[in-house]
Amino acid sequence: MLCRNNYYRLSGYTLTLRKDDKLFYENITLDDVMQIYYFDSELRSLLLRVLEYIEIFI
Image (cartoon, rainbow, N blue to C red):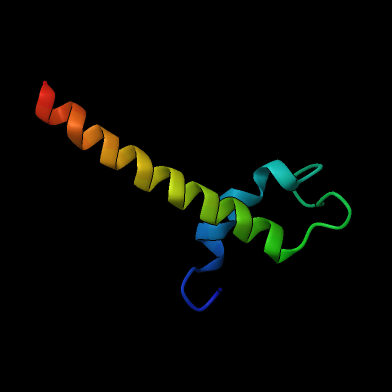
């Protein structure tokens, strides 16, 4: 996971999993962060496909 994505890219996906700037909520794992990352990636792909049709229509 970290071989393809560096810490700084993934750190943005941890913001909703933190109590404050330094501490995470209990039982948060790297897998939780990666699930958010993959969800964002899929959502971005879906939106780009739809935006292509909207762009052509306009």
